[in-house]
Each structure stands twice: as structure tokens, then as C-alpha cells.
Length: 470
Image (cartoon, rainbow, N blue to C red; front, side):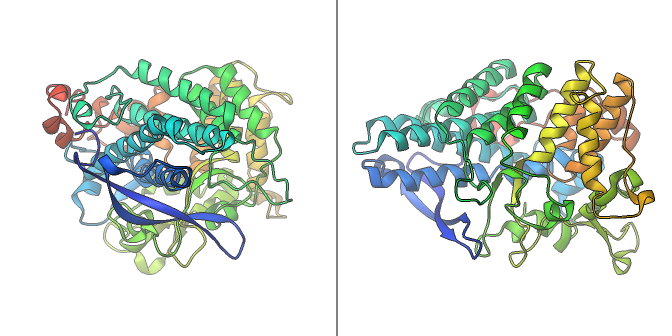
């Protein structure tokens, strides 16, 4: 079964907007059950509830995607008792891994709710045309994001275009290239009707909902993964040039939700923080310390080149002992802290995408060269020290090969534990070289995640279609 729902019920996390002291709106979900055959999307007042349900469904992809992206790679070592994370730490991932099931389920939950909106919204009377266009665009954006995550994680996956649950139970795999073509179509359609998101009242753009900038950021990442360097550069530049966002102090990247660098992030409040769940990042990285930063990662992140990015991790002498190196990740806080959201896109990534795209096109130096963008981030990383020796060194020259390795390392410093590392190594063809040096258990099969075994068992069209090696 492709979606975590039976024929009669859809278990959705619905959301209502609340205003915090900063006057910024966040999503506070409350779980309710809705009969699929009686789902209320019959009048204009119903649209807001289902719209927020789509965002809530997408939010379910965020923590598992960070886990897949960073725990599969060389960032972590196992430090606890959970089998799922032992598999990730030891690089012995199986198709029964709970993270695979959680990500797969969240992808298809998002697709389902978005398809529901796209099917029903055109027939709902009384909806203002501007609202209909905006919500349709949001559904296309979120569906595109879900399918992008699914295809880049699992490869060939079922492509679900309707809410017909009986039909969806037997959809076979669609090749990744076709999925990605459809992802781009969703992004392009969304771009037309989403708001620009300009800060007309003097506040920074609120990153809790999709805007044109969020779609352009998604397209920049999409084109980077597709090796379309010119379009990746153009899309990243389009976000940067809006001047809606700014590179904040890196300490704010670590410790503050909805900071001025954030383009799109999924939000939580004290009442629904994921920190206590099986996939809650604060619970895994700080509370239980089920996984800890690997020694290899620590040796890199605390280097001079990292500068202020060292704030991503913290050391506790009292936590040392046995195989515990005493280090923890600081990016995901508790309900009482201001950093429990998960960032999907931020400005720092746009500079890195543009740098890589420019390097791949052979432009290393000058104002439109790769090194200029890399140095923008290094300058930010040394901003809060007056001691020259503590500032990350700027790079003035490099060959293309050298620049690409510098950018790979800069992505480690800048985007650590935001869910990018494994995807980066796979898309650049560097996974085997990096990961085989990190773990003797690494094999090429881990360049795709396994289709969850429960889905193979439930869907007859997936029988015999498991990814190679699992």
C-alpha cells in the first residue's frame, strides 16, 4: 500500500495558524480522523484546513530525510540501542529499516493530500480565483518536493496521480527520469501562481509557506542534481538577487527558527515538537544521543576552514566514555528552545549551488566565479572574530577539480546535519570513494535506499522490484 491510510480513513495532521510573540505564523497541528468518502472540501471555508493538511503531511518528510541524508553517510557513529540507527551507523541497512518506512510513508501521504486538493479544488464553489490559484500552486510545489525526495532516495518509485486508493495499491515503479520530469513540471506550474513573498511591511519574508523564492530554490537544487549547470546557476541567482534574505550570523542558523536566511522551513511549536518521537532529531542527537558525530566528521568541522560553522556541534567532557567521543549536534533543540524547526532551503545553500554550477562550467575566479561564492560563505564564517588567524582563509585560485573538492568540503561545513551529505556524495559519484574509506561495510548498493519491505509485501506490482542488493 503506497499510503498510510486504509480505504475508509485518512489520518491527517491538521494545522491551525498561531501568532507567536514575534508575530510570525507557524503551523500547530492537531490530529483528527476524516472519512475519505465524506472529506469536507465542498465549500470555500474548507480549503484552508486541507491546505494546511498538505503542509503538515509534507512536514513528515523532513526529519526522516535529514536522517537518510546525513546518517547514511560519514557524519555519524552509533551510540545507542535502536536497531534502525545501528544499521545506519554500521552501514548495514536493511529493507526493514524504520526510517525507510517513515520517509516512504510521508512522501506518499504528501502526494495523496496534494492530489486530493488538485482533484477537488476546481469544483469547490465560492473560492476566490486568487486563492484557488495559490493553493493549487502550493499543492503542485509540495507534491513536486515529495516526489523529488522519493526519487532521489529510492530511485524508481510508483508515480501516484490520483486519490483512488484501490488503484494506488497496485501501481508499479516508474523510472526515475520520468519522475524527475514530472517534478520539474510541478515546480514550473507552481512558480506561476505563488506569491513573490516580498517583505512589504518591513519584516523578512516568512518561510513557513511556499513562495516563488522557495520554488526557485527547489529548482536550483533540482537542476544541480540533474547536472544542468546553467539552469542551476540561474535559479540560485534568482533567489540571491531578490535581496529578501541575508546571511545571518552562523550562530543564528544553529539556534534560531525562521531567521532571515530561511527560504522555506517546516515549523513546530512547544505542543507538537518532534523531539520525543522515534525520528525526532533532538531526541536522537541530544536527548538519547542515539547517534553522535563521527570522529572523522569532528576532525573536519573543527578545522580552521570551518570557522563559526563549528557551532554545529558541542563537546561535553562528562559524556565521554567507551565509544562515546563526547560530541553532540546543536542544530535541533527542545520545545523550549528556538531551534526545533527543520530548514528545507536557506540562502547559504543557494551560494553553494551557484558555486558548484559555476565551477562545473569552468568559471573559477572573478565576480561571477565559483570561488567568489565560496568566499562569501567563508567571510560569513569568520565574521565574529577580529583575530585574523581564526578566520577561514579565502581562496584566490584553484583548478576546476580543486574547486569542486573545496565546494564539497564547504558543503560539509555549511550544511552539516541538514540532510545533504549522502545525496551529495551519490550525485557527484563520490560515494564509493568516500564511504568505503569510512566503513568496511559500505557497498555500492547503499547508493539507493531500499524500498520498505512492507511496501513490497502489500503491493503486488512491487514484487521482485526491490532495489539491487537488498
